Length: 146
Image (cartoon, rainbow, N blue to C red):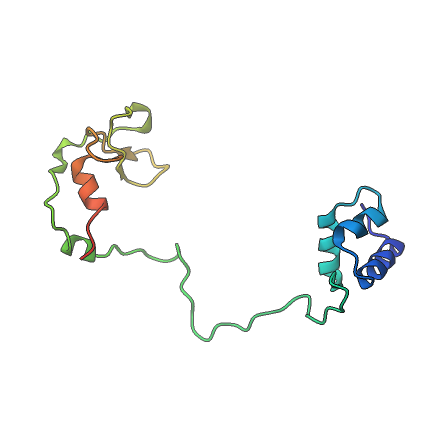
């Protein structure tokens, strides 16, 4: 629906009377939804509580004083802390079959190797021991807190 000047005036009047967004939508008719009324009120800065809304519509935040690191950007380094706290010696990885997704069976380990989408991306494929992983990969991914 296109908001005409007449519809906006009715919206402002009904909001000032303290009507809810649902009641305003019914009063305006033309198949308007409650959410359409709420959205238009937000864009116009009209309060639906019956009081004038003095908040600015768009608030800009000041720029951060120091650079903020973004998750997933830049180089990634793997922590060595995980290996230092390993209490259980993992099973040898030599049992891994490194299968493609189409070759996996329901009983195969789902531990990934490589980058998803690459041609050489594979899964371990060894028999599952606990959850979705073989014993080796389970101990790598589920270590007790120190």
